[in-house]
Image 1: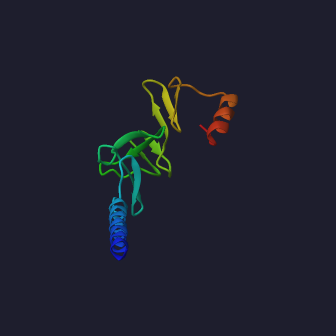
Image 2 (image 1 turned 30 degrees about the horizontal axis):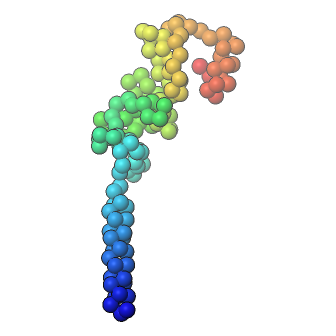
Image 3 (image 1 turned 60 degrees about the vertical axis):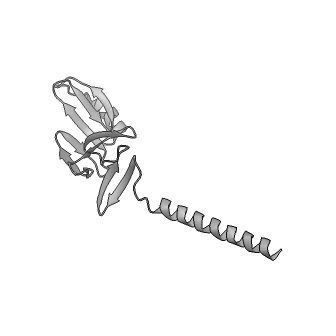
Length: 131
């Protein structure tokens, strides 16, 4: 009986060591593909291919902008795109096609389109600001 208890204790210890080692291995992985990561005050998006996103990228139905190092653009305008504090592209105008993107939604309007007061009110209600 003593031998059986000794073997059982060794098996329990070995199992505990294996589970602890596995848990430490999983916990040490700091970045997973397709996830947002923060370094200091800057945010980056780690892509499925193991690289950080750069340029303009659609993530979770919103367009974000990233510089050449992968830093998410926030509170800035770059290359015709305007980015909010959350990094989402909230407005883009393409004068050649009349396309206007507002908070990830695409609209097509003539380049010289001037909204009526009613249309301005509807846009204000939808997006919380004047156009």
